[in-house]
Image (cartoon, rainbow, N blue to C red; front, side, top):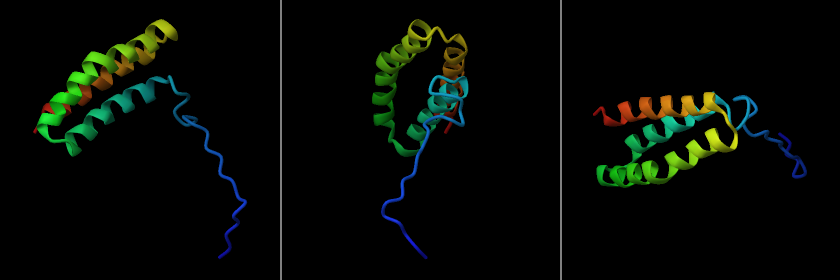
Length: 92
């Protein structure tokens, strides 16, 4: 086995998902964030997270998708991911 310390690895961010503002990325990032909270966070911390999410993250992402980039498709996927993730978060 041989290792080269001068080797470089290039990683293109979001290439497979067609960009940082793609509808697939918006859906899965939102849904998976909520699923992560369900799996790894205790109930009282979930309440804090949801408060933060709906007071800040929701509005920031909405502004980025709709106002800054005028990307209604990504915003719709963001909402769909939010609904799907929230449904799974509430299931025990």
